[in-house]
Length: 220
Length: 220
Image (spheres, rainbow over the protein chains, first blue to last red):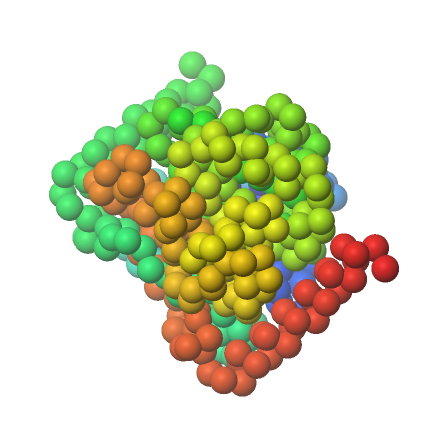
């Protein structure tokens, strides 16, 4: 089972690494990290470099595709060559998945038209621009496409995918292996649960970053 | 606030990346990834390279230190130069933290002697070899040392640390930003919750990997 994880400058590392550390434990899994070109990709705030061992042309097919999010997605959504690669590799996959705003990249590639999909809570409405139907759920399955909500939701998505592919006990075993028995100190992980003033502050911070990312991506 | 995250060959990526994507959002955070030497470090199964931008000598001090786990820890526990660096940087930190078997590295450096500490559930007893008192809790604070349980527990640990450093609302905001509203498909994330046959299989798989890692690290 070949698992291709797409990396790009400005991604959020956890979007990619949550699914990675779950899916790599599938029996026979062969994980490959792919960039628009091979080489080091830097995360949003620049301090972390992750290595894309392969460029797009070297990975024409995969059983599972994972597309992470992050503000760099604004630029990726404008890269014709990457969108074309996504459309092509999607025809070869058993499962095409995204985490956070990675679904906006899939949407920009035209893969979510007419489908229910999710993304980070602050970006849901943007899915409509590409003909998708936004759903405020943690993981949304539509045929072979699975979209996950923001950042940490990729772990839940990947465990669900493992259960589909390898059965419930394998998923339980991997969950136990990564000791995923979550105990956050607060119950503030969704806009329905966090205090209103916290939601407002986070939304404002995200809007600012998004505007900056759009500005940078549009080359203005 | 300078945050140093230690990277090494054979680490588990999520151990480092969970805390990274939480702690980097602390106001004024400056994250630096440190290896025994600067350069690319590869995760357990080799498919992912993460870049350590700095070597040990370039990072003599930090406000927060994060030491991830992974089977490569067996080798790190025998690296005198790394253990010496850990003892030295620990004298400069406000917080010294570990995720998963990263605590065994701290223990090997002599930093956990006489202290309560945790690690991945399958490695708890090994803490005793270094004079620490194993505790089966998700996050254990002892003065300025915080140890977290296996892999995904680093996210919970980091949110607790953010609350300590920046207050509860900042931690809630970061939790909301990474949409950490966990919804695993199963309740099998700890040996107390997973079915007994799953615990047994995972324990066996881990024992095998640990024996291989010890064998490789001892150079036999």
